[in-house]
Image (cartoon, rainbow, N blue to C red; front, top):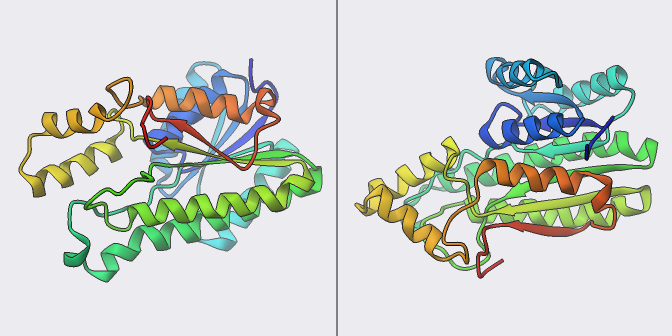
Length: 260
């Protein structure tokens, strides 16, 4: 198994991406610690993993609460002995479908503020622990297209902010034996968050849901978008020792987006 005896912390573990990654990590032998704002969601994922003989624990943690995240990281490290992997799957709660010139400042800034605070707080807390042990992998995921795309509000800038943070982490943590990698997804059609984004765009544009999805997939080489399970499989590979020479890079899980 790719992640035998590894200890993984997943923030946003009750969401669709975090849950898919957690199940894949556990299947590959990792001991998984899930954290999220809603206890019922993270506990449901943990329970599903335990039912397949995987090891998973769940905690209610607000990633915007710096003190709470610090306590959680220390508690996990005490229970497990160390932390080998961080996967950050915290949502940005972005608002899309509105032209920038018609968007309120609060709506534009919402995903930017949340991404900046939650990603920094969780990555720093785990990195501080990892530096004591001289090893670790810090992973996150974005879906911000590098090309010009209309009506995505603050989501694109939020993704670029996350990627900029990961570049800095990769540079500063490499001497401590810690790798930092960002996955770039094109969005997964089987994710509720993606489906909500589609709803927002369809409501404004008047196009059908099927037409909008077809347009999104048409720009990729495989003429489709990546499923959650496919993203999770790549995350497991990047978290494993088989990717030990990779850091400070962006791994495209986009079904062949030309911009990737």
